[in-house]
Image 1 (tube, rainbow over the protein chains, first blue to last red):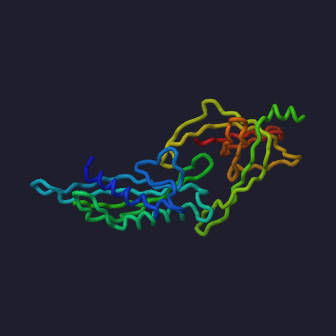
Image 2: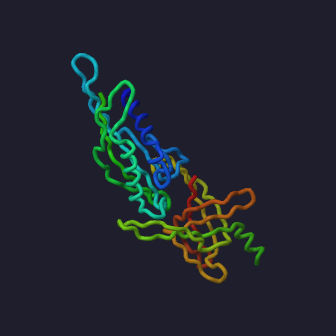
Image 3: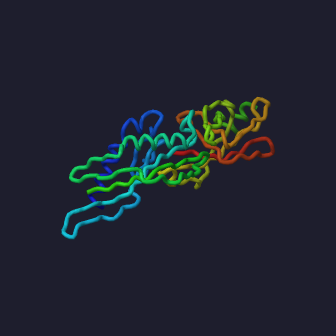
Length: 145
Length: 122
């Protein structure tokens, strides 16, 4: 495990775990890494490190750039909102996530040179007992020196 | 008759219906919940060995299956059940708390009783 990725993971959680993301009408089930706890109720945000990239180093020691790809997903169940379609709610949550990150991240001992939404993931759904659960999300590229 | 009913159907439940409206992007919005049938006598039994834990919706979800048996008629009127939009809320009895059951399938036995397979999430 790269120490830089751990710093970014903690930094991302700190940026995402704010009222703009978890407040009323958004991801009230919280923000979670890897998976939500068993007692979490939708809607919630799950983020993950999905594609660690190349670590560029100079010939003699040090670090030039560490590339990483993170995935931020909104998990929404049908019936979570009485005024929005489930996917609409999920996209609103993702927009709030992007706003919260605001293309900046500060970590101690390193500099996050680049942090932007890289691409969206294809939304998918799964049937859980009597209802559909929708997964919508985007990939976030980070480059840290 | 009242005593016989109480023996066969010791519990009562409420059939809740979720109202759906059409959104502007091709999906449905579940906008409200109404109690369609109340105080329905029933018998709720868990199905042995039909319970599991699975990763669903990015979390580990525990599901236990139940069989609910209830009359097809309430106060002389046949009830209409729909697994797509309805849930069963079994009333508390004694120390046993109320529980919400999600309908999987509904069968009608000889037009006298509904036999419903349902799920309880934990």
